[in-house]
Image 1 (cartoon, rainbow, N blue to C red):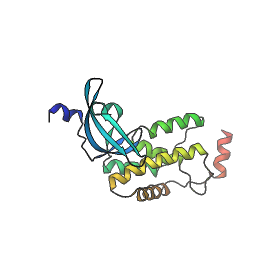
Image 2: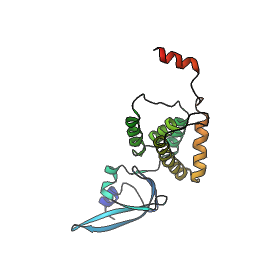
Image 3: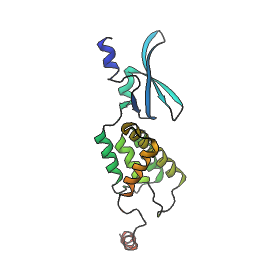
Image 4: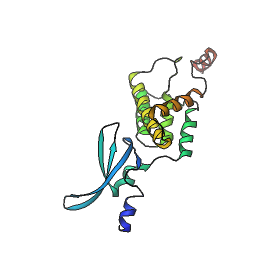
Length: 187
């Protein structure tokens, strides 16, 4: 194998689980060559089992598309710690916040995805979420649980339980005390 090919592959190997920002966790099932418009292209063939989708990504484009290896254990810990923090919800229009959440989910950054899960999480004592909030929450939870499951070699269900346990350890997630609301209205 030529050194050029090793460099182009960025250390990715067949059967390895990776994170593709727009789709989440996938597995490289093969590395193949195809001729496209008269030029030979080396491609990673990535399978996303849950989405029943196969993606072919030129090895030379992995950096440009943001494909990365699974998060290290320390980064997973940081994401789980993020879940325990206080939700940070900007006082901007929902459409703008929704775009920001979507961008974080598609960034492929496990900590940013954990922030979306934390910010959109609703406990049983809180008011119901809107349909679009629920959709974004589910998408972020799915991405986060799939990566944690792959890193820790557990099922997605076990990963979701771990995420929910971390969320439960966060600050009290109920309605604001009445005196806080009065102060905010006076300001």
